[in-house]
Image (cartoon, rainbow, N blue to C red):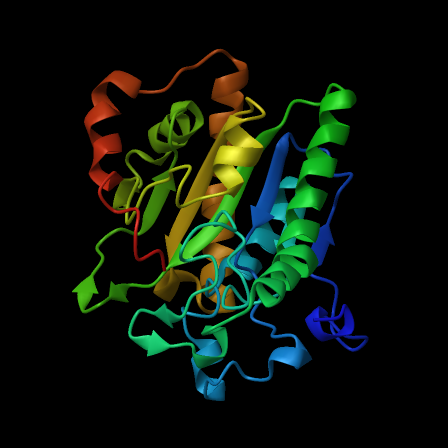
Length: 282
């Protein structure tokens, strides 16, 4: 198969990486892996009705708006993915079985079935790699400049999955290093919110990419923030949550810089809550 047959993006397709405030003053560096819901023209509709692209299967509803508001409020750099997670999931290793989903919740993705190795590679090369290469490049520039950095990956989760209602307002996700998540959890205490540690799922090397690769391997503080989608699907909710969480992120950052360690001992059991939920990531 020739190069022309395996090309994914055409002249009319947007670049896969969307950037904000790369020279922002904040120590916080934001990513949004499931920000977009675009499909390359070459993929058509993936066999889906248009309404399916509005659902959580296609993107993290409200996450892009929340991340952009974080960036504005915190003066923080932000890197977002333009294309739908149904093209390729940018928070999965490309070798993961769910990297290119053939079914999402109960919806079959016909256009993702029976892909050739060349077609899979085109999605990795033209969507996944440019996104993560840019994150890596920006983090490396900050490292070389001696800029302290905290990686905050912004996501959202559907309120009901496979008929199961999820009670959490917000989840704080991590794997080997819970320190910054616990500082943020400390800041959330008394808020009246239902906060889950590694809920509604958890981070692992097998099921995740952004936190393990850009956070853990670089040895920088990090957290994945998951907000329930019905709370941020509209502008008003995004405004309210951005105001609330931006203040708390500043508080956690200040505590970290003052040498705080968070409530690790009394929260260690919470970390285990999500260890069995490394599947069905929506």
